[in-house]
Amino acid sequence: MSNRIVKMVSVSAIALMMGMGIAGTAVAETPSIHGTASRTASSLTVEKGDIITLKAGTMFPVDGSTLSKDGQGIINERINKYRGQSQVYDIEVTGYTDSTGSAEHNQKLSEARAQSVADYIAAQTNLTLDQIVVTGKGESEAVATTPEGMAKERIVVIHVVAKKK
Image 1 (cartoon, rainbow, N blue to C red):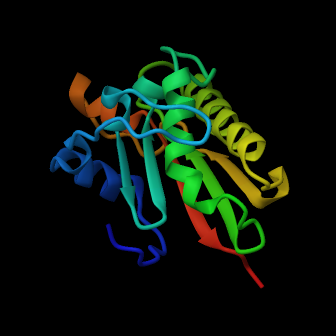
Image 2: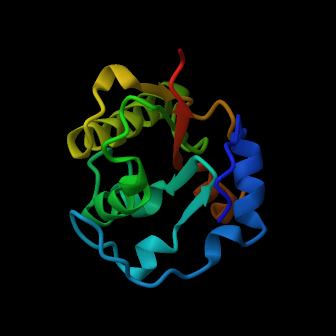
Image 3: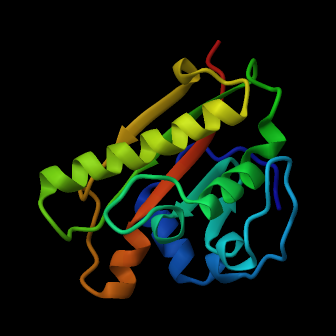
């Protein structure tokens, strides 16, 4: 995988990458410092440069924001390379939903899921919550009309960015 820094990728571009099969590659179980994600859970993420896209169906219960054990394992594996580098990186965590339910409910759910991921990252690294920007986009970028497409819209994106000087 390339180590180049990705400036910004819209959720539409991420969904396009996922639709093209980039996310479907199976990953063998990989032990991390704090646990192991199952083979299935590991294959349900996309990592491109410094952007990590987590599929909400694996990370959270339906209509919930409590991070699952598989979700914790996935995050541990994906952020491991950033441990101990809090002086170099800041993190942006953005939650997205599909258009099922009310816009208000989806906005709150996307914010709660992003916050849950941010809290977990802060607890597992030496990053402070001041270094993690949390945003919920709700259904603002949802366009899918099929169950498969809607599942791809239910994501949390972790964007690791160089610290602003």
